[in-house]
Image (cartoon, rainbow, N blue to C red; front, side, top):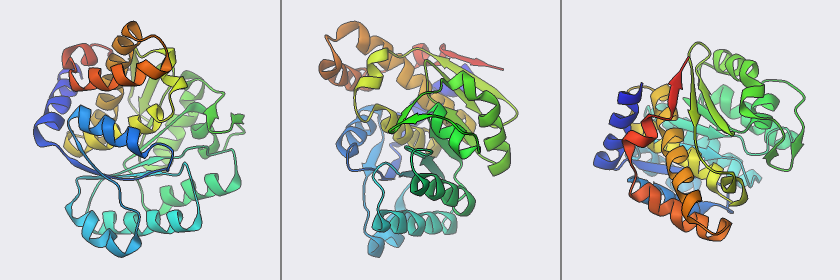
Length: 263
């Protein structure tokens, strides 16, 4: 698995996949900068009128429900339909699922109709989608990744997808095999956009990986490595983001890969 992670991260740097993010308004700049530093190319277009042309040329589509309204939901559905038509892989970030009916129902609708290859979220979001009553605090999680292992596996099997759950230890499962990624830094939870950027990076890795599972693991391994190193250098959350982007740019793929264990 470690060899596959290293190969995926190098392939991302070499191929510079074009990742289309229909994402929330809070995190767009952070997502774009993170993708560029990691070696991918970001594209962020929401207008339905151009989505046919856009989706034709991309390598992956990322749907993030962080700031929902009827126009964004419509754009996500249209982009998802075109992604299916043109066989482009899709990642879903169900931001705040469980916090409101709109968020939960929108995420479940995308799961059923668009059929994303990967769902990446926190523990509370995954519990909500799996049909459990999980406490949420806004869009933040009150559940650790390892607390929702069974729910994540059930979600993966029910929707034939890979579920990537962020936490102190990240957990990625396809319902049968499970990988764990250790690293990162607590300051990652104090910078808006880091979690959503992990989803964007998951799209970039998925675009070049041998499988969605390998792509999801590779993205979280890269973030764990960069986050841990940035945490050693920074003075707080403000400087953390700058160091984090630098660490992504100067990434040590071997260090990222060694953080992965497979079960």
